[in-house]
Image 1 (cartoon, rainbow, N blue to C red):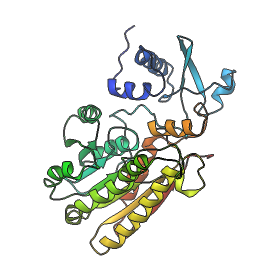
Image 2 (cartoon, rainbow, N blue to C red):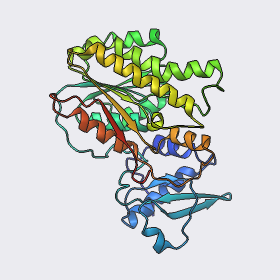
Image 3 (cartoon, rainbow, N blue to C red):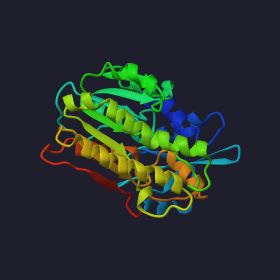
Image 4 (cartoon, rainbow, N blue to C red):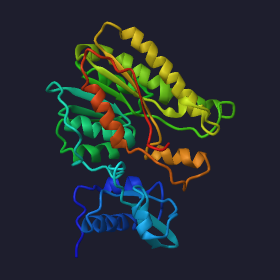
Amino acid sequence: MPFHAGNISEQDLTMHAKPHFPFAGIRNVMMSAEFYRRENKFREHVFCNRQLRHEDPEEIFCFPAFIILEFKKKNIRLYFRFPALPYRNSAIMKSERKFLEYEFPDNGTALITGAGSGIGRAVALALHQAGFHVILVGRRKEMLEVLAQSLGNERVSVWAVDITNENALLPFISDIPRLEVLVHAAGIFCADSVDRISPDVRDRLMAVNVHAPLRLSNLLLPALEAGGGEIVFINSTAIMGPRIHTDAYAASKHALKQEAGRLRDQVRGKGIRILNVYPGRTETPMQQEVLQAEKRPDAIIPMLQPYDIAEIIMGCLSFSRRADITDIVIRPVGN
């Protein structure tokens, strides 16, 4: 019988397939897994390439995040897992995903960097569902346009721009008189220590992870003040302990925390709230880079989903203006 992928877009499937397996036909296999899930009334599936450790299907069902479906092609095994609570969200990001309902002022505008994938994409979906006009910012125009299309191209703007290029940003920023939410989700990862990375890599790491979000925040301060805005910095729990393989990345996130604190002092009394979010391991393309750096790409470990982070952020944004939530740490259970 024919299989209809519903609202799972070609870009969704491609984005989650490419980091793991290069061969053609992966999307058909993933759609077959989704069909299997629906026929058997399992929860939403999460694609992964990790090793199956428990051979007994009955035993596998006892573990909420373990894999129960396997496909083979060209001697490569593809695994899908069907999580139960608390692993309730899908890494395949679908536009019909329903977040908790929050009340925000009508006609608000939110700008999200790194909106093409991962946490940025999930936050953009949540803000759009809450009624915001979302400005999707990122380098990969095709990914932003696919997301915009999945949102119906309503209350959506696409900025395909490098956030480290201030001259490229200025023409866009001049058109924003008022901004309610600014989310800095763009970031890059470096798998090395501070004393070993080249000056060029170090400069790029700091430019994307620290200087660009601070510069963009300052450029948008008048619009944020007009909108009683919120600034959200996506940081990382990497700063909260020693990281042998990734301390260059952690150092950049330490710097971001410091600069966010300085910005908070700068805007004190202007009605702008600043939130630092420290996600633990989250199933994103960047997390695959982290596992590669740790030399355990096939490890089975608890992970958050981008939607988990998005829902936490939405809750913080909707909180009473009498309170200022400055820092929030989210870790997966058991990690």
